[in-house]
Amino acid sequence: MKTLLKRSALLLGLFTIVSAHFALPAAADSTADLIMTLKYPNDYTVNVWKRYG
Image 1 (cartoon, rainbow, N blue to C red):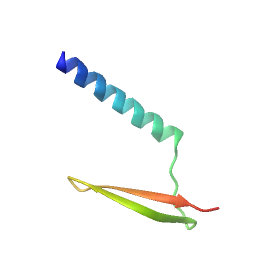
Image 2: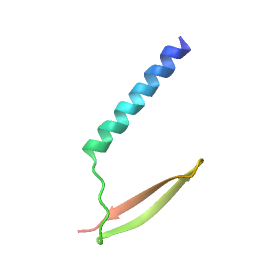
Image 3: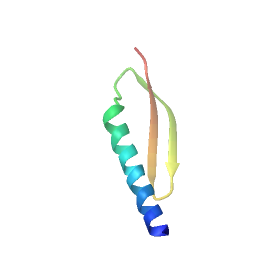
Image 4: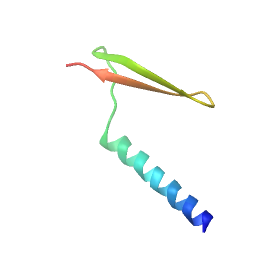
């Protein structure tokens, strides 16, 4: 039962990430400012940008 729950959660997470990737394209150019940097374990960093214009 735990294996099925873990597998379902993993598939739901992957589906969410892939859907967000195609639905919310990210762009950083000269009109964008970095507003937040999130650092996670294992040297994983997420930058949050705000685009003006």
